[in-house]
Length: 170
Image (cartoon, rainbow, N blue to C red):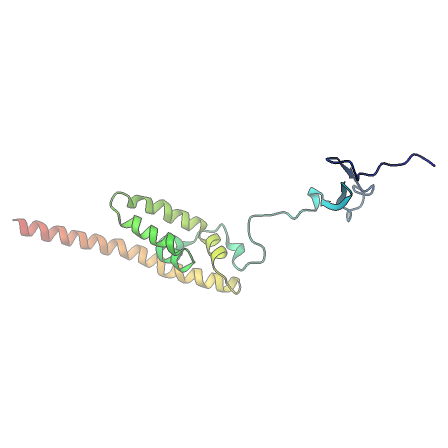
C-alpha cells in the first residue's frame, strides 16, 4: 500500500483548498472545491461572479438611472409622495415653509433631481421602459412650467402686498 492521504474529518479548524487542475486552461471550469471537516462545497472564483453595475437588472426604467429627473427637481414634495416616499415629501414641504430653514429645500431638490430616476425605479413598479418614460415626462411637463410660473406669481404677490402696506401707512 502506498502512502495514505489523511482525511480532513476530525481535523477541526483546518481546511484544504483543492483546485481543479484544469482551472486556468478550461474556460468552463471556474470553481474550486473546498473540503472543510468532511463537508463538500463549491466556492466560485472571482472571475465567475457577475459584474454588478449598481443598476437593478431587468427592472423597467433601470437604464435611465443616473439621468437628471426634472419632475423630481421641480415638484419635489409631490413627486416624492407619488413615488412612495410620503413622509419625505411631507418633511420636505414642512422644512421648505420654515423661514431661514427653507434654504435646505434647494439642496434636497437637487438631490432628488440627481437620484430621482433611481428612486422611481426602486420605489414604484412600472410595466416597461415606455411607461417609466411616460410617467417621468408627465412630471417634467407639469413641473417645469409650475417651477417657472410659481416664483413669478409669488414675486407679483409680494410686490402688490408691500405696495398696499406702504400706501396704508401714509
